[in-house]
Amino acid sequence: MRNYENLVIVKPTLTAEEIQASINAIEETITSNGGEIAARDTMGMRKLAYQIDKNERGYFHVIYYSAAPSAISEIERRFRINEELLRFVTIKYDTNREVAAWNQLVQKANKKTSLPEAEAKAETVEAATEEVAEAAAE
Image (tube, rainbow, N blue to C red):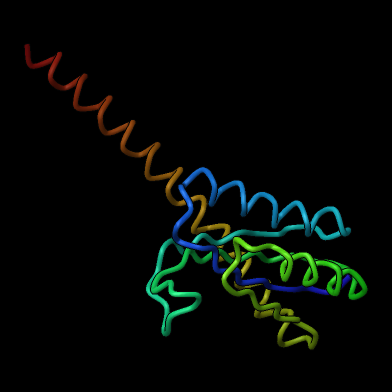
């Protein structure tokens, strides 16, 4: 199994639910072909460098995964068929240096996804602390 990264750009005309369903379908394509997803990085809606199919913006999503090299052709074939995708790129990490960089990217993406959860917990704790302080002041 080799390490790969896929950057996909989803059409901006879709609703949030449709974008999420499209991303779930993309991830299902990877897992159904024997891939194991290591991390995801949602980059959100961004301006494109140039128009693609009359779209100036796109929803960017990066997926880091491990898969057999034979599965990549099928994954890319399904990406080409998917009309909700504006563009996609598959990057293979092969050498030891590239694999080390891939591991760092996976760790960074996992930290990035866990940060909002940690911030939400911290805000909850702060709110509870403020409520206790207000109750004690009364």
